[in-house]
Length: 460
Image 1: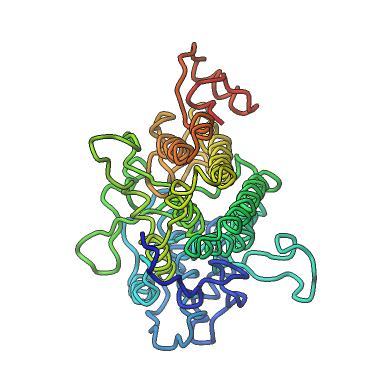
Image 2: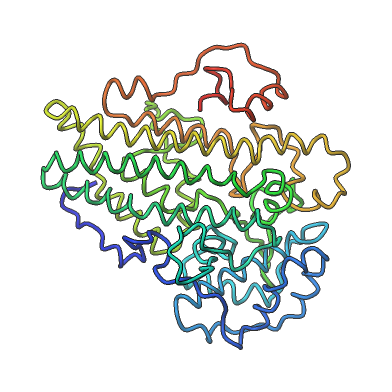
């Protein structure tokens, strides 16, 4: 953290003041004629998945060279499309396979190296580079004027799941500029301008929570869990889903293990943490532990799943994020500064509360239903994570980490970043002893949003 290290040039990192981590130009919708074999399969992918023919069709593909890719937009399109094809190939039939054919593996590895991403379906390939305008000349709000380019299932629910994330990134662009302006003014000692930026940032983060909750408008939890989520899984920590040791790429002798697509791969979320100096540690470790808790390894690992330049931006941001230090040094002379900073922390904590609500409704409760659905041979249970038998606290996300412990700790660590004594008292999580409901009862209460006050799951 430095007061002298240069502020980042956003363009250098493929970040935009207008669109944030989304490309300023619309993603490429299709590649040229040479790559038509990929595009032809992608156009009918939901039908191939439905009829369980995806592997036989992909096995007939030729091995295409990446030398025909000329622009970054073309590399991104190729990366996105191969992610859809590969995940359908692994998870799209009754039982997963542990080997990708050379026709997918060879070009995917080369393209991934160019983009500095792993060859797996990431948040970037699924969301950032997978949308197009419905009516290019329309002045309608972006979320009402975009559609996905590719999906696994063809369902509206799947498209909406990706598009809400696109809109989230688009609306989050403003918070990047506001946060960097706050750092700039702090360097110049202009406290009132820092206060104004922090107040604006708090409002912008609050709105992002509203965007997140729009997920419920057109993405049904049952459809998400049983129809879409299995295809988002990677090949790490997936033994229960049928992958014992990962996936072999082409003729490689050693399997690769990658996490699947996850919202934790959003550079925006980590950028907000960095702007406010929110620190995350290994799950189970106290933030202020005297044992010297390490940085959360999952959060650090997720940067590897972000486009290379975006990960570089976060590294740059980590060297200039002085806001928490500035607030503490000027707390006595500018109490409004402390309140404004703590308002940002409160809004970010509230955002994480909403994220836990979404995860509870879309994954935790659905997983409880799965146990009572009878035979696992039904089509809705044929693939991936839907087969998991884990209990509630051990349920893993598509990124491979235990969901609830991770999300709850991230939320609590956010609140603990508050600078003022009142803010710390209000936002720091303190467990309270309660009489816990039964597992089934707590799930029902959670769905209604009426958890018992003081319970761990209920700290929303």
